[in-house]
Length: 333
Image 1 (spheres, rainbow, N blue to C red):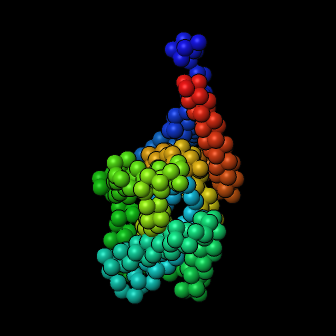
Image 2: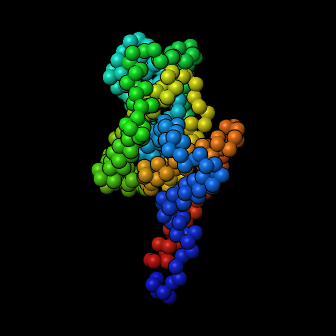
Image 3: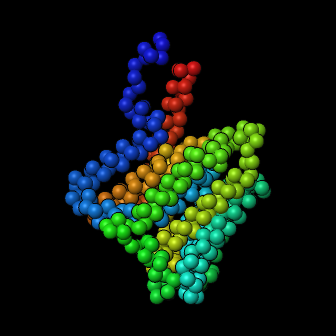
C-alpha cells in the first residue's frame, strides 16, 4: 500500500504529532470551561491579571527553554532568582538608581549561570548534580545576605521606575505585556534565525554529531546557562516590582511551574526539539488553570498537585509524540 493510499491518521495522533497543537487545544479547552463557569474570567482586568501574575514564570521559562532544548535541565533557576532579587534589593535600599541596580542584578544572574555552565561544560559534571548543588548554594546566599529577612524597597527612589515598568499601563495595555511579547520575539528569533540557535538544536538532538560537525559544544552550553542566569536576573526585577520587596524565600512551586510550562509547550525533555512560542502557550495554560482555581474558590494548596500532574502528563505525551513520529517516519521510509 502506498503512502497516498493509506488512511489518514486519527485526529488524536495528528494533534500529538504537532508540537504546539496539543498545548493550544488544551489551553482553549480549559479557557472555555473556566469562561463557562466563571463569567468574570473573560473580562479584560482578569485576563491582564493572568499576564501580570505569570510574567515571572514566563521570563524564567524562556531561559529554561534554551536549556532544555540543549538537552539539560536547570534546577537552580528559582534559587538564582531569589539570589538576584536580594542583590537588587540591597542596591535599591543603598540608594542606587534603577539604571545601576537592574543591570547589576542581570549581570549577577549571568554570573551564576556562568558558574553552572562552566562546571557542566568544562569540568564535565552532570547538569543534574551541578544545578542541584547550586540550587542549595544560591538559596543559602539569598538567606545569608540579609539574615533570611526580606528587603522592602517600596520607599527607595530607584524602585519607582521598576514599579512603573512592572505595574504600569500604556492605555489599557500593561507595559509588562508589551515587554513579554518583545522578549518572546527576540528569543524566538535567536532560536530560529541564528547560528547559535541552530547549534543549540543540533546539540540537543545529538551532542557527539554536533561536535563532529564543528560545533563548539562547550561554548554553546556555557552560553545557554548564562542566558538562563540572565533570565533569572530579569525575573528577579519583575518579581521585586510585583512584591515591592526582595524575598529570600523561594516559592516552592516556581521551579515546577517553569519546567511544566516548558514541557507542556512541546519542548522535548530529551532535547533537540521545542521553542519559546510553545512555552508561552504552556505558561498561559498553567496561568488559566491557576486563575480558574482561584475564581472557583479552590485552595491554592491544590496548585502544586495540579502542576505536578500536568508535568507528568506533558512528559508522557512528549514521549508518545516521539514514538508516533518515529513510526510515521518508518512507514514513509
